[in-house]
Image (cartoon, rainbow, N blue to C red):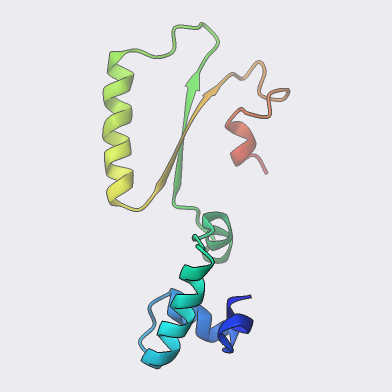
Amino acid sequence: MFARLSNTSVRTVSRVLNEHPNVKESTRKRVKNIIEELDSKTNFLAKGLKERKTNQIVIFVDQRSGDYWGAYHNEVFHEIHRITKQSEYRLVLSPSSPDSFHSNENDGFHLVKA
């Protein structure tokens, strides 16, 4: 879509998105303007498929007993969150239970199952 709207090739759009130096400045501006006009955001899932990595960390919290979160866990989570933000990773926090993840589509195990 960006290629068609900016009258360039898909490869040129890819180069612009990846900050490749071999793109004319006028072309780069045209492509970036189209992307900005459409308020486009990076699709992390698509990027992960292409690069064969997700840059995503999933934290599963066992919810079976009901007492699954305390002050210690909060501190650990905040530190992991701080580090992932600096590293441009995405962080997913998911309450989970091995007893019910099959029937609960909101369980984080659905993000990582094959």
